Image 1 (cartoon, rainbow, N blue to C red):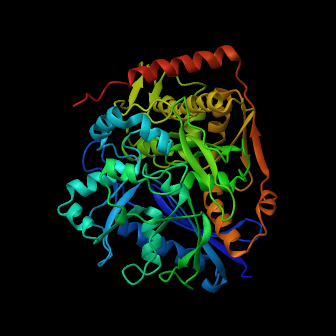
Image 2: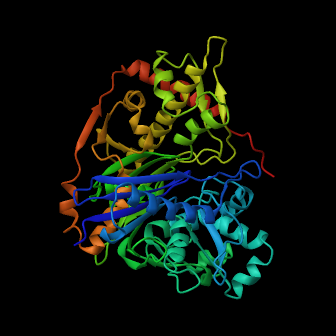
Length: 499
């Protein structure tokens, strides 16, 4: 057995490659940001060729940085931003348009009409509300708006997929025999897969106007899909998980009731609900948590928040209030509260549990007393409040009361934020020793497929607590904080008029 496993972590703002040893420890990593394109209000796009090239570069840099030979990788797992979709020419291997990102809201009008006509049935089949977040409406837009795209798709000249499909196809040879696959976790986020059959649903394909020949084959999350010919050493690609499912897997969330919250570009609370899908009555998403060969699929309930770390990025890149994310904790600690300032970062509308694409960002409660430190603190609090909105909805759906919450993702290095999160929730917040849980989950999936680890029992032994935060807030103050948030939330609604 070779000594290492690799994981491609292709996210919304950057791509990383991490190398893990047999104990799940990071021995090397490399990361590169890619450009965000905003051609019109509400539109968000990526350059898929840039993502591919930076993926290859990250693999090369991580191997070189640790002086690890390419041949020492037993396999590679892949985790990715999930709903982002693209369309490409299967002969030339080039995308016919940019990748449309999960945050993009250009299909809002179409989704409102479709929801009015078929919303309940679509939700019953997919576990998802009819909103622009998911891939299906974006793919329909590509087919309808890119010149000749629908005609070429119907002639079998084009392929479509989420970013995992694009990378696997390209890395395994592209036009020269590339493998066109996705895993069930990513497929469950397209709004084209039937949750019960785990296959593309013919009625949904008809409703959205998607030719079945465009779509990848749906596979399990842990198997060998092909050989990555474009990467050093041509390692096997042996695991695929959507990023949030990968984080739950990396947090050893293998059992019913296990839950985690990941603070990345967005914020995603995901609970394993066992082998039967639970359709939410409180604005959450029903999704697939993981699928292992010859085992029943695991389902999950998820609350998706669009803006978490991306709100910090906005403070840096758009407002210039900070020069780096590392300044956030120091600035927020310089004030003892938010100074009456509340920030609702609804730049792409509000996701779970509200699902209000008509919402837009709101900054309220301003007085001349307010400083940039108050705005920075209000931004951290906004992420914590949105998490509370989701957690309370999840408790109602699952019929359980959470006593603690496992957390991971980039924002968890900010210890003031984790204290704020514990205060807002009134529950214990638990950070694991291994923070790279998203990449680790992808590595776990690949390692299981390659026999690198014996099974889920061995993986559970890798998980350990780094630190915990308990609430320091009394119930009256907590209620007052949350009431202010709910009032601010109301101010963000009805900003986009229906056409």
